[in-house]
Length: 539
Image (cartoon, rainbow, N blue to C red):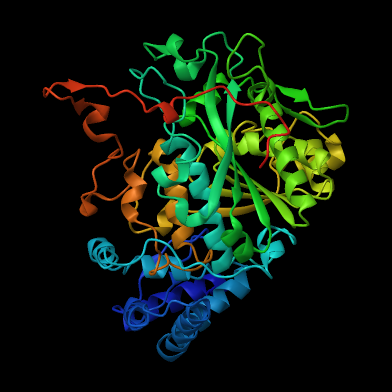
């Protein structure tokens, strides 16, 4: 009789095992032609049900214990009920040098997620944010002093809260932006500086706005105002692009320093900046650092004939930072600079950080960006690193914007630098990355909703629920799930949250004294006024 080969012999063993235990084995395809032997499904279900009873434990320590318990219990059950399967799988692996992937904790738990409606309803009477904790002794690590090493995976709960704070500052630049094409102030901020955080419900963070920032487009008629029917009544050259804020005394004591924040707004639609983007790299200064031309133009453009951009966005921000840092340093306070932004705002944040690192070489500077594109080449990245700028990029795996520009020619070519040398014309990301995944949340729709995936509220939702790359969505996540659908349609239909629900009552119309629906006039304090240029103004 012809002797069987080792592979043929193993195939016969697999068939015999399937025949003996048909109910406990299911097949999944691997990269080879052989069948992978997997764990009994009912054992994973038992373990998950046991884990669900412990969901009320909320501390970081207990979450790690739950994860450890799941792994240990699963391994014990596998050893008890599937020793033959495991030994056979190991034999196949050793013989053919195959790599059989173990099911991740996240993929197992997602199969048995509690009904999303029940989960959402259970949070209706709970606070929408985590309690504030004193981080005065830890602020340098949270601010990126060690490049967030060992703080991202798993995500430290104190860092999570700070990221959400800065993310809400970035989100505020959208919520306060007047993009009503019928408004005589289209393109401006809806609120004055004094009431800004109160109007948006962000006074809880303990910051005060000190200056608004306006930017110009490189185009004669800016894209963000071309749909306005009354653009000439306010400004056709500029639009409101962000603000500078400072922590108040109470927040300063909690976080251990006086924190100066610059928040930059992205475009109203995520496709706008990419359509308008030049995609050409332009030198930044006298070195080898180069950045995308369109981003630099928005940051640096000015025109003497305009009301709001006689100076550039760069000049406005740097003048205010110089004034604030000098004031608080003279008072003997420790000062930090945190720059945040979403999408285009994240790109402008890096340009701002680069310029600030030159003016303030000893100042702790961090950038917290959300869904930001690449900005410059590898020399730009290296200069930011050498100047001590700490950058944390929060991205979503399914978001296309962080892959641009340089979809093909990007940092992945660095592994070929022995052959190509340093490629000065190739785009390169900057800093550490916290990568999220839409599939991790049971509340979000799957599919190719690129606008919804890119939206900052989607980012904030995923950050709030993120524990680690191998953990399920956090059951005690705080933020209101309904916020995800403010400007998009990302929530599963079972929650019955209407898409794009965020708008002014009656779309801004009010009833006058005789009952006619009219557009109200802005109060005098909310009418935009040109920025004040005096640097000696008291803080």
